[in-house]
Image 1: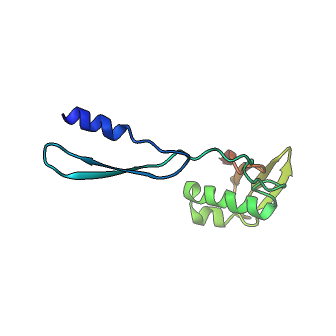
Image 2: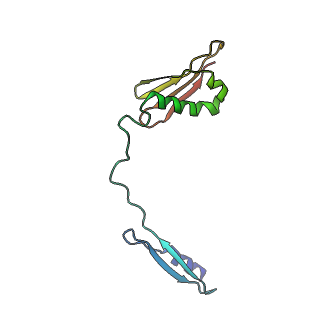
Image 3: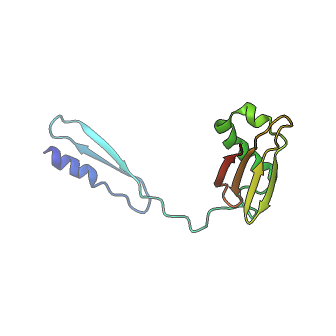
Length: 127
């Protein structure tokens, strides 16, 4: 009997996107269960809205994304010493890098970020 009740619950139907409510009586304990089903949403006929210049349209946005990635990896203090940051656009990707401090012998943080969708293509730090 339990199996039958479970299969009836699985058989909920939705018509044309309207919410369908069904009540079922459990034969064992007499409790009434109300279940709801909705139709799955149809895919949108329109493509997702993408800005004409991509999600990373300018150098300021590229630097902000790079900082969000660098700080957890290399530490706020270390990255803060690499100001000013530069960002250049080439072949659809931003190249963002820091400036080495005057007293430093090592390199700086470096990132490549896709202009269209903001993907992180490369993250590195020179030695």
